[in-house]
Amino acid sequence: MKVLLTAELTKIRTLPATWIALALATVANTVLGVVAATDAVRIATRDGAVAVDQFGTLMLAPGYVFVAIAVAAAGTEYRGGQLRVSLAAAPDRTRWFCAKLAATAVVALVAAIPAVLPGLLVQHAAAPETDVGRTVTDLLALLTAYLLLSLVGLGFAVLARGLVTPLAVLVILPVLVSTTLAGLFPSVVRFLPHEATLSFLGRAANPPTSLERGAGLLVLTGWALLFVGVAWALIVRRDS
Image (tube, rainbow, N blue to C red):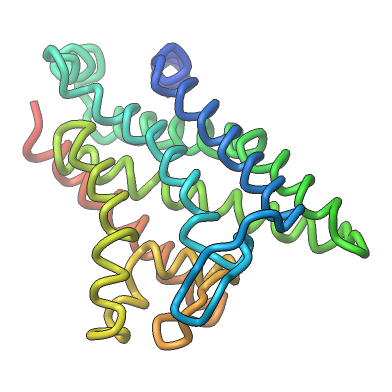
């Protein structure tokens, strides 16, 4: 298992997409942190101008760039017959998938620290009273959200057998689907991954589509487990 885990970590570390996604997410989070701290920009809504910090979808947007790390980790296996090579080297599919899952989770958790910390520190440093406890709590929440979204992305990449579809859907879901259906089916939309993540982070702006923070975490965890479970089943029974 140690050999498989090392091999998977090396694969992820050497993918250009890993470093590109990390760099873009870090820059985007830092810029949003600066903008939120200075309150120099406001977003027009039906209820008037809203501070950037209160616009949850925008503040979470770098997370979907970050998810490309996990999507690439799984999706690149389907390019050029790479999956056949991987499975030939590790015939035990469950063991190989566990190594892929563990490596992706480790990378996502570690990489999320530099991705979110600079922007979070900038934003909290501008507060009238800097609360270290709140900063730590917000950091842990963001790391958890980024990890769970990454697991959703990994499972989605296996399901779609590639990179483009998962990334497109993960971007379209919050931008178009959630906003379009929020007024029609709020009781359904609140359980989608994006809305559950916003609820967990305490950034849900629309009460009808919001959950308690604990419930948001449970729903997001459920989505992550569902996609990971589906990915495992497909690796064992479908892919070759």
